Length: 103
Image 1 (cartoon, helix red, strand yellow):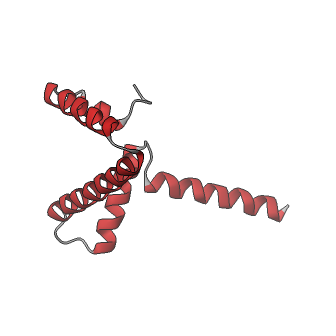
Image 2 (image 1 turned 90 degrees about the horizontal axis):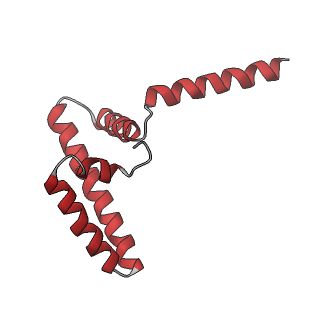
Image 3 (image 1 turned 90 degrees about the vertical axis):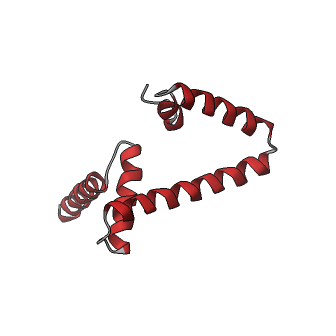
């Protein structure tokens, strides 16, 4: 399903994933709102660190700028786009504005 949450898509791949997600969801439902927000930030930061560490392992020669570019591109890929697609759209939008301004 295209609109299903990514964590549900990933968890559905294995029985252990489905059970783990169910435990996580029960635990999250029991937390007060401010703790849920804090957990979301913690999870986001942990995920960022894990992703960047994986990129460093795969690309030991990469600079921090290159690691950041790969990281952002991978995040965008999860949302169905890429840096190249965004840059292409921005270029097309600028070109369209330039043509309108020239007329």
